[in-house]
Length: 396
Image (spheres, rainbow, N blue to C red):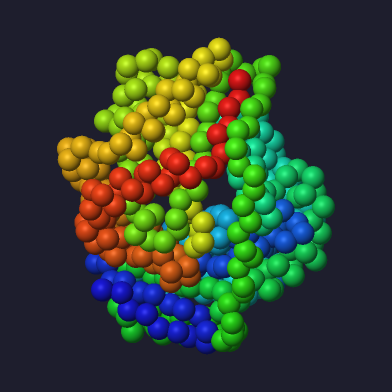
């Protein structure tokens, strides 16, 4: 049972999960979609959350987290920054105090910012050395325009241009109560949770959440890249699908049937029957107002055309319908994933935060929706995905 309350404009969700640990997810409407003129700004700002505050330098901050013995981390996506912490129940108050210190008082000291810029640039260079990742980023930039078009980390050039004042202004503007959700899942009682939140999150106030920059779609179509140094060919297919919960979840069931597991159609066709590909991938990526089905595969350098034909033919055949046995297996696998999620306090906390922040269904609501999807709904969702355009990108 999830209980919810507001404190000075901060939305808080709490779920009891018996045991010795409590997980915290503080999710903020401040992802790469909000970078504005500086691609990579949100990601760099996330790095600075661990570089010290007005009262704790970088060493003291990270030592304090280690003293609490918990998992202390953060992640930036296109939609949000999530700051997470998992600690013993008795350390919840101290953990919330540390998160509040980062949330309100992160310092953007120029020397430390320059160091983190170098770190991020090395991260970007590492991804550029991966042909599959490079192709995926080019396909993504072909599908989107505007705030979603650039990589979450930005580019080497865009990160180098970011100034301390840009990061400080971003944190001050975005890390605000109306933009944020605090989710807590664990063994601490609800009264103690409420008291700790009220004690440490005192500096913010109510207001309106930041508007979300609109999705802008690009040209789509076919993208062909050459790489003389790569011994493999890579394929990425990005298919726009509806972002509404029910059709998106129906597409997710279809992706499981078509996708990358050993029992799936693509795996059986590409790896087991044709011996074309060692790596086959299929997943969903989404935000509050956009969603994609993503298919990827690789093959020997000279077999790119055959790989593309095999993937297209398999996806098109699947648009003709699914068998009852395939649907049963897909539902069983999803039930297993939900059960695994239910055992993870941290995953539950992140899911609760994102549900409140963006209106996504909670894991429990998602499981109920999937259980009611008909075969016809799942088949229509896949037909819509396959025949709706998107980007097909090949590197060879």
